[in-house]
Amino acid sequence: MKQVVARVVAKGKHIRGLYRPHGRSINFSQTIMLNCPEIAREAKPGQFVMINCGEGTVLPRPFSIHQVNDKGDISLYFAVLEDGKGTIWLSQRQVGDLVVMPIPRPMGNGFSIVPGSRNLLLVAGGMGIAPLYFLAQEALKKKLSVTLLYGTAVKNWYVQEHLASKIRIISATEDGTFGYHGMISDLIPEYVDWADQVFACGPLPMYRHIDEGFPQLKNKPVQVSLEVVMGCGRGICYGCTVKTKDGLKMVCEDGPVFDLADIIWDELL
Ligand SMILES: Cc1cc2nc3c(=O)[nH]c(=O)nc-3n(C[C@H](O)[C@H](O)[C@H](O)COP(=O)(O)OP(=O)(O)OC[C@H]3O[C@@H](n4cnc5c(N)ncnc54)[C@H](O)[C@@H]3O)c2cc1C
Ligand code: FES
Image (cartoon, rainbow, N blue to C red; front, side, top):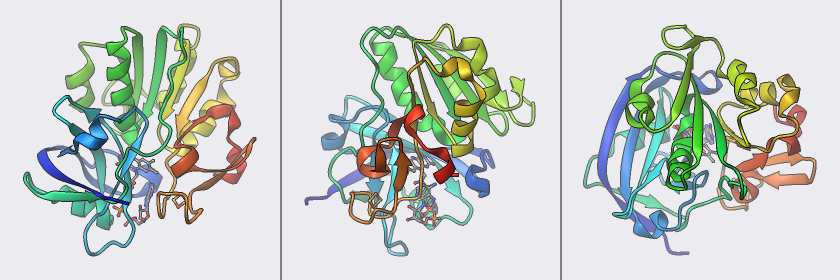
């Protein structure tokens, strides 16, 4: 299978110490823009790419497609983990450097907007904003209404600066420095009646809270993007298997987007 070699065309560094996914410390978050027309033209919100992250790593790392432009670029928005070999390596790439994607296509199923949906409620926890940002932009192109519930550990201006003029953003911070003081999922009940569909991306405990905490969501289509540890990223190792009501599924091939109601959380958390 032919790989894609993409050139870094831009990078940006964001806020330090922002998130704590899975309890791991984070140095900072970063965007990186890669020129890869063959992936950009096919990409759908919720899909991801696998990136080879240098000689010190064996397996490629999965990253959601965060934005796409008409010059054939995709951007990624990722947390640089304090002890993460791959994310540190990627953060050190400079404009002009080359990055290899061993699988030459956007991966996974992506989110799907049901025909007739007008009002989309997006729920992002921390780096979960990465694929939802792309979804918000696609929804705006289709002239749909978007409300984003965006929860972070501390105040983060990145998304507010880029999207606030176009969609309604409701923020929550765990330390109370900006917006609602607490977990973003606490705010879901206020918007459930308005929403035709709900899309969420964030840590697994957030999904479980959404699934068990809000019976009013039971009659709404809720799609979640699962972030589990991946190995091969191409359906060979079974390392990303999750249990669903429809049997075992591989997050890399069958996901990463699943209906919330289909996941058997006891097996995952
Ligand atoms: C579908 C999908 C999309 C993702 N999108 C993003 C994104 O847009 N932004 C972002 O910041 N992070 C994203 N992640 C998480 C990201 O892949 C991990 O943070 C990254 O692989 C860690 O690599 P590392 O070498 O720095 O860490 P290490 O701990 O050194 O990695 C060791 C191994 O574990 C795997 N691994 C470790 N943590 C994770 C994890 N949380 N998820 C999957 N594999 C992991 C690595 O791929 C590698 O094989 C996504 C994960 C998945 C499954
Ligand atoms: S990561 Fe290997 S099968 Fe999904």
